[in-house]
Image (cartoon, rainbow, N blue to C red):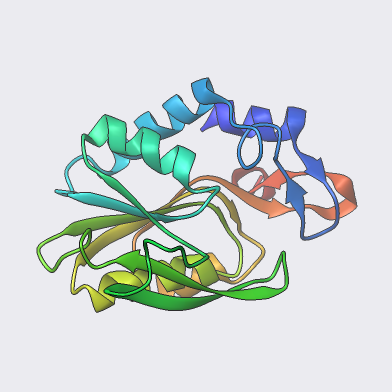
Length: 194
């Protein structure tokens, strides 16, 4: 998706060989026009999959998932990282380790919103080591829902998450795959093959 790649080049900040900061448009401040196009792109990729729910994780997955849900006309469920007074039992839960934040979180979804007859698209903003996606897949498995794929806005192709999911036979659709962040430069997967 060229618009996304251009945004990454123009506004993304390479903090190290493994960290790309995109908080000006994706995961702190959100660019609604870009998210609208992200939602349209994912909807086009998965429109024939029979999706009934989109499952994401708070907070950075909510914007792209909501725009995709708007296009597909399906509800969006987000797994919470913290317990609340209203979300204490009757839950599906999984443990997720964040390499960026170096903490583990138990993520939870109410059993009221995810069921055996649901056809689910899992979505998130980033795919690096795959822990968030694996946690969401575990929640869908607990609900006995059918997962048709994983939609990722930006995949770090140089980390193991994408390969790990694809090796399990899971359909992964990433709108931009970063092949390298070496020398402070973003190189996308297609460019790396040239």
